[in-house]
Image: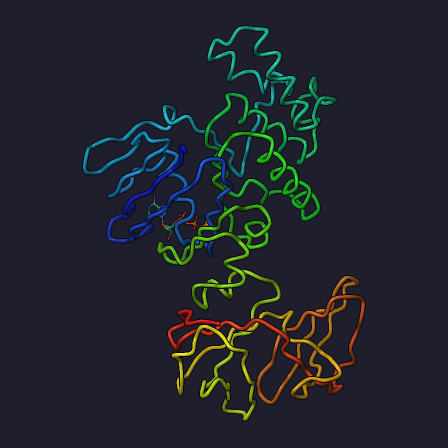
Length: 358
Ligand code: ATP
């Protein structure tokens, strides 16, 4: 199957390493998100695949064609890589109608008139912008403009579509709507999507796979639920999920976790049987910290934020404070004491933050 392959790709700006020896296989028709904090190398990676930035070293293949190789001296121009772009400031041509904005690229490619018409109609329908086809960009809302920009990008049927924070200019509600549209669009086209965001929720909800980076180094490349359930290290554990995962220092001995506070947790059998008498970091997702009638320890409610569908609670147990999510429309009184239960999945990390089991 055609795909994108990055082999030992490094980008240096002077002495600064922006992307460090990145190896990545992006399957055909997948939706890949490059995720990580500001400055971690997401945009640089996207730009190198797209042909807008020259890697310092390495090799990039798109659909079995080497588009860049430092060793072989190959560097194919962006315009020859059969790719499309959708950037943050997706400026539409203001003096052209929606139809013209979409058809312009096809006219440049000298497509016959009837084929252009059919393609434009198809895109207007797919993106549900038929009723705006004769309007100018200034007469459209942000979300409508965004959909026109997507239609324009898709017009020539690029095999790979690059998107760099395309939703960041939109308000929260519209962003949510556009996420749905993008996911549906991915389903409706044959294109591979490569998407840059620093928004973990966007990455979690949209992607088939997340490429999570830190300081130019790949931390984990896996599907969103895998990253959520089995984070490779404390950085990836902490980066995905809201509220944040609880990361707690314990000593593990004979399958029992003890902390300096005297808090003891008996852990379920897991693949860490070799780990004994060792300082570990326990990763506990908020949904596994439950306020119940029969918890093993008592906790004091520090804060309670009900939102109708769920309540985000901070619970104090001795000197530690835990994030908890309680589903449903409950509320809790600050200062009350409740039994706390830990009904499921733990992740264990070593002192350096690397995953050692669950
Ligand atoms: P953001 O989310 O803030 O856009 P990013 O993860 O996309 O961040 P990049 O834009 O890929 O980060 O930049 C990675 C690092 O490389 C940053 O520290 C940035 O300052 C640096 N960098 C990027 N472009 C250049 C350049 N042309 N010259 C020098 N340094 C650069």
